[in-house]
Image (tube, rainbow, N blue to C red; front, top):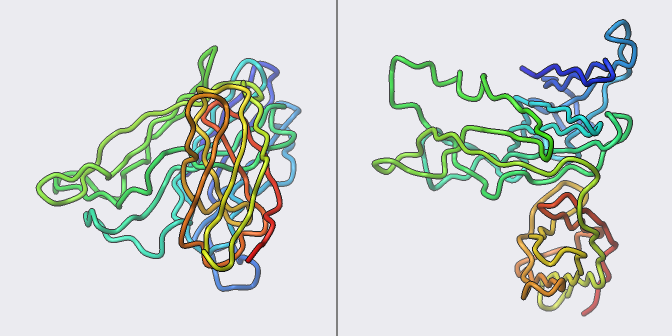
Amino acid sequence: MGEVVADEGRHGHVADRQAGHAQDGAGTDPGDIFYIRSTDRGITFATPVKLNSDTTTRPQWQPNLSAAKDGSLLTVWYDARESTTCTKGDPSVPCYRMWARKSTDGGATWLPDMAFSDVVTPLPNQPDSNIVFEYVGDFDYSSASTTGHLHTWTDGRVPLSGASQQDPFFDQVAIGAGSDTITITKAIWSTSRQQLLVNATDSNPAATLTCKRTSDGFVFGTMRTRADGDYQGKFNGVTSSPVNITVTSDLGGSNSADVRTKP
């Protein structure tokens, strides 16, 4: 399932899931997220654009799309790229996180995809036998206000009687191109320590920065700050160089840098 929206310029936008898409010759991917754009009121549509950038064969599903008056778009979807399996109702098995991708020019181009929710949640169960479990998330919808893109989703991070349950969660991102600027000043991977060290600055010291591997979107973690605009991330257990990393903020900023290797 996907979502269709129209902006005030009468452009049509569609975000949808394509199943059974062969990915890089490594088996069959259960599902990827694609965006399709029309600039002639739906008479014709452009070639679909794949929005999830991961190179795994883990599934992405149930995308939702919002269009703001400033021409920005946000697509949000369920994404299992950070897990290896999912077990219904088991709070000890992380399954999916909400991921998103933003356009600031009406879908002509897209910024890098980014983690939208802050936890890789277990797959929640539905204890009410009168409700079909597979319907979860079917009626998620995104919308936009004058200041932000708004989205709800089903999350299983809060257990009930030892089992993951279905709870509605909400978050938003600002409209436009982002209200902050990120500069990555250091990105080093140590072979002996198996540690990734990332330093960065943000023009808005209130921002929360997250560091991820650019190639597949794997999240290393949140960077620390003293609210002075300087940020540092020390991530242990990184057994190989990520080659290139991307730092994103909750205010919309994003920047990438190559990683230097040292002993």
